[in-house]
Amino acid sequence: MEATWIKEMFGTEKPILAMCHLRALPGDPAYDVERGMEYVVDCARKDLHALQDGGVDGVIFSNEFSLPYMSNVEPITVAAMTRVISEVRKEITVPYGMNVISSAMLSLDMAVALEASFIRAPITGAYVSPAGAGNLNAGEIARHKMAIGGKDIRILSYVVPEGCDYPAQRSLGDLARIAEFRAQMDVICVAGMVAGNPPDTQDVTIVKSAVKKTPVFVNTGCNINTICDQLDASDGAVVATTFKYDGIFENLVDVNRVRAFMDVVKKYRAERSLA
Image 1 (cartoon, rainbow, N blue to C red):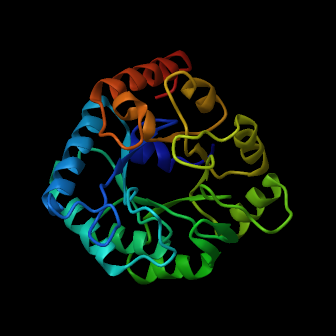
Image 2 (cartoon, rainbow, N blue to C red):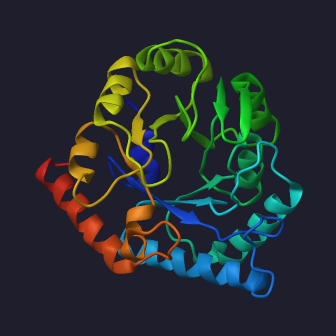
C-alpha cells in the first residue's frame, strides 16, 4: 500500500471503518411513523457511541435500512440523513464518511455539507443489481466533487458492488486494473453478495495483486475469527454486522462485541509492528 493518507486520516495502518446504519427513514417502507425521526436519531447516537467507545478507527453513516434500495434516491432520504447526522455530528470523535446507497453524487453532497472526510459509493461500471441496471460515469462524479468544493474528500468504491453483477465477461483482476486506471478511486472495496457475507479471500488477493498502488479494503463479512486473515490480504476493512448484538444485521451495536473485535485487531497490529 503506497497511500500515506490512510495513516494520516485514521491514525493507523489497516484501519477498521465501522458502519453506522441509520434506521428506516421517512418514505422507506419500514419507517416507524409512530416513533418518528427522534427514534432514528436516538438509534444513530447509541450506535455511534458504541462504535467509538469500542475503539474503531472511523465511521461511515449509511441509509442501510432504506430497503428495498432505490436506484434514484429520493430527496426525503437525503434530508432525513442530513437531519440525523447533524444532530450527532458534534459527538463524533473519529474520521467519518457518507454512504447514500446507490449515489456517489449525493454522498459527495452530504460529505461537503457535513464536513466528512470520505464517502463509500460505486462510481464506475455498468452492472445489474436488485434495484435495476446501473450505469456510472466516474468522470462526471470526479468533476462534481471538484465543482462542489470536495477536492480533499476520499472515495472508497467497488470493483463489483454488493449484490451486483457485471454483464461484461472480464476477470476480476481485469476489472480492478481498469477501475484503478480509469476511475481513480482512493480505495477499492471488495464485497460479498450482501451485508455480513464475506468476499472470497482469494478475490481480495486477486484485486490486491492486480492494482498497482490503490489500497484494497475488505468490505463485508468480517468477524472476530476471520479479521486477521482478512487484514493479511488487504489494507483495511469496513465492518458492520458482527458489531451488532448477537451478530444480527437488524440489531443495534454492542459495544462489548466492538471492543473484543478491536482488541484482536490491536494485537494483530502490535505483532506486525503496525502503527
